[in-house]
Amino acid sequence: MKKNLLTTLLTEVTTSKQPVTTIYYTTGDNYQKNTTVLERIQGTLESDPELLVQFKDVVNEHKLNELRLVTVAIFLTGDQHFVYQFDRISVDAFVSMKTTPFILPLVELKQAVPERIIVNLAYDEVNVYHVAENMIEQLTPKQPLEIKSVLGEQYRVGEMNSRSMGDKQLAVHGHNTEKRSIEHERFYRAVDEGVFELIQEEHTDLPIILAGTPENITLFQDVSKLVVRNLDHNYVIKNQLNLMQMLYTNYKEIVAEVNKKNAQYILDNASTENIISADYTEELPLGHKQVLIYKRNYFTLPVEQLESLAKLTLNAYKMKLPMYFLDDLDASCNIVQVD
Image 1 (cartoon, one colour):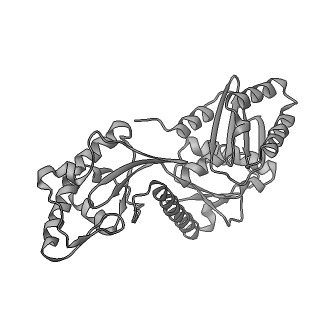
Image 2: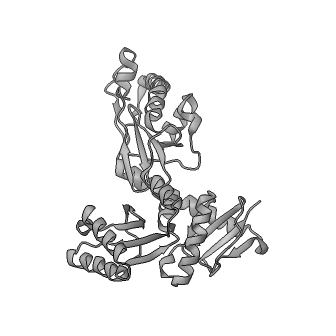
């Protein structure tokens, strides 16, 4: 399976045997302001000359002074460094020197956009996409996943009494309706293997999400024998157009809605004794039947709370505990015991 860049980075950082320096900063579209932010970070690192030199080398190597309108995460550990850029978040500049890595923003990013395969279903073609934290890419099949190519001579071009709609789901009138319905089903049944093989090439273990009109999704689920085995039923994208960026946006919105509902449901149904506030707590016993729910705007918290959250999040990530984020929360983080 093709490695996910962010997952690899988190694995390296969270398994480091050395203290980690964590840096986050957000760039705008003004070169001088971005340079000023980098200079401020350098000023914070001046107390450790070796660390300062390492940071300057990273800035030059990755040309960080040229970045615009992104948030950058930098982890410095010994003679290694890790850099990751993603959509802007509410942080100007944050530096934590040689201590527990602060991975919470990257954990939130992974939770906001879980890595998945999206299979977008049109009437006469199927497109497959790989979506991860801050990207979406179309996978290229060896053979076109189009009705004409897949069915070959079995396919019959529609008569003039049909017209094209949004995602090529055709509205057909007259005696041609039954014929097209049969071709539609035959196409989805035949394309199932090609879609499955395409996914297996590099993304074997990733859950699959279906996108398209409700009719297309229902039909594909009914006839699929391979792709359907690994469907993630938590998410369905009712997409009317085969536009890659729209798919990505729709996916993020659906995930955000599901995550918010899940987190709120957990809190609403937990008894008081099963909810522990993590404010200013250095060590908390974590178990496998626990869920962590964070207050989203955590960079506004005092430094002491952020240090506590860094340790808590590191342990929770290693234990693979579910983590959610809510805008409105009384504590910096609630640990909820679930049955």
